Amino acid sequence: MSTLYFVVVPLLASFLTPFFKNYLRYISVALNLLLLVFALSFMGAEPIREYISFDSALSISFVLDSASLFFIVLFLVIMTLFSLYHLQEKSRKDSFILTNMLLASVSGLVLSGDIFNIYIFFEIASITAYILTSLAKDKKAYSGAIRYMIIGSFASIFLLIAIMTIYLNIGSLNLETIAKEFNSINPNSQFLIILSLFIGFGIKSEIFPLNFWVVDIYQASSNRVNALFSAILSKAYIFVFFHIAYILHVNTKYLGFLAIIGIISFAIAELSALSSKDLKRVLAYSTLGQIGVLFVALSSSSVDVVSGAIFLITLHSITKLMLFLSLDILEQKFKTTSIEIFKKFNSLFLTVIFAIGFLSLLGIPPFGGFIAKLTILKGLAGLREYLLIGAILLISLIEAVYFFRLLGSRDSSQTKESVEVALLPKVLLSIMAIAIVYFGLFPDALLDISKSVATSLIGGADV
Image (tube, rainbow, N blue to C red; front, side, top):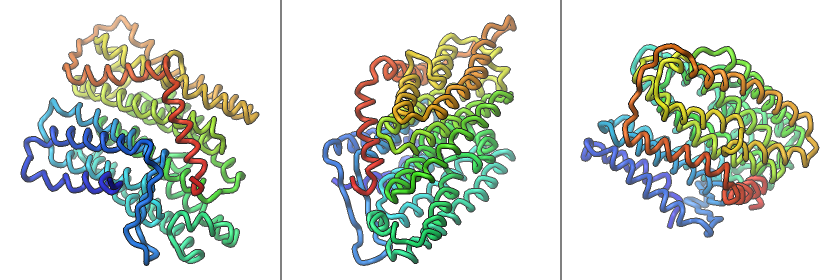
């Protein structure tokens, strides 16, 4: 068994498009299920290290530990649900190729054991995201893709600056070697590396003050593309950034700075969502807010708090996939994503789906989001970070205002138009909703997994 298959198989599958162009949606489901079963077969066998070359500074290594395996499984679950959702539609070559490229790149990002390889997959993921943004093939989509590409280029430049500085000081790009030698580097060079990594990954992770562009990209992209961006892509960048930070044993003052940045990002995102009149933008701002909470939790260096962040990543990915796909159904019906459509549609099923999603994001019991935020807050209380706890609770009240306002608009006496949801989307959305409720009522198994992942992540190079 080789971890290379997680990258190679999705890329090679793209060559099937000329031969099976009418069956690509079925191949996509089969491929994701096959890789998911393959990933689950590694459970208990990690950590695994694979080296492709030994004699070069650019040698390629993949590391599969409990943290990287968790994210591989999460991404494959999301991609399986996403591909199943498309079974009802005609196969599209562009969508098939791009989703496979996205899966290969995020898998490569979380598996890479050397920073140059991370850069390669960073670029593949970026190029894929630019093209996905333009799939709608209208002026807004093309404009968004070009803007995304320009901003993404700055992220790549700063990541290259970090890589160059590391190589000039250490002579190796292997993360284990860098971890051993990092403290011997000049403090000014250390600061340059950390700053460059923060800017490079901060842009892609969508954290303040580097996320000014994000909501416009969500507005320009289709809801289905946004589902992948929110559920998979941003999570991969966040994991890799903190994985590197812990491997380098970054000074606690820098981690404290990340926590402050996270709180500011959470506050600005929720305040912005409060005044938004478009559901795409509301969900985009909500994603930015949750990313802020993740930065607070992941920068804590505490297994208890970080395990809450891992739990939140899982629930947030499932919830945002569910909400964006639900919004896609409404947009196809009403040709708009204005919040006014919440007053127009008549569908008990979609109303329940949105309610479950919103309440889970808020952290209301008995939904999974409640367990995630409760775990984070309990962990922060153990660290006596009462200011952070107060800030999270206060900002969450702002979040509650706009979500309850949306749910409350369903009581309008305005004439509503019936929305029919096909059987397959209804089944898939129901599975996601049930998962959100299940993890809220029976969280122990996922909490144990999250704790194992958190231990691996914080252990960094020592794991």
